[in-house]
Image (cartoon, rainbow, N blue to C red; front, side, top):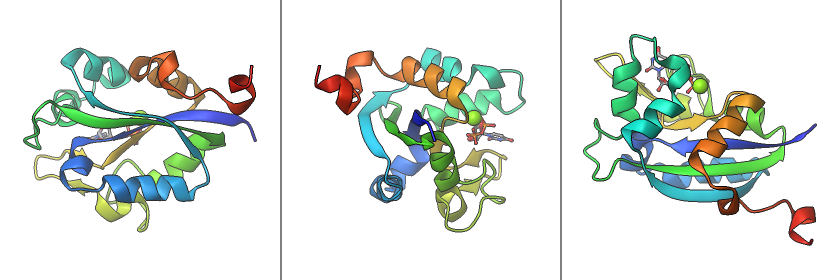
Length: 158
Ligand code: UDP
Ligand code: MG
């Protein structure tokens, strides 16, 4: 299996409901390595760029509000952005996260345990996880500068 990097965001619902530690605990239990982490204040521009593939969807404008914390009364529009690295990291983290729709997510996944659908129809599903290698590369470059991610051990020795 190839060593991959994947982007994870603990979304504003996850932060405001104090699910940060629990989420990291589950990610760490996978054996993958956390190689980058920072709190980010999400600008409108960053939110739109991150979700640009969904810009035609009817839920897009609320999705931008959601990822910017507008539904969670947060000062500074915060999310926790992380990069995890390891063999098959992208699929492993997607599995830990669970299905996009919290009602369809397996019990025991983060979204299955803690996600909800609001009465307005928004999926508040606690975390974002990159869905494939192309997305992962694009998203990591969007959220992190190269020197904010730990190099692979072999490269660090050089
Ligand atoms: N979303 C939503 N309603 C939908 C589909 C998606 O509110 O019908 C939100 C949800 O928060 C999801 C995000 O939009 O996590 C991005 O959608 P995507 O299809 O990329 O799902 P993901 O990759 O996050 O599982
Ligand atoms: Mg996606």
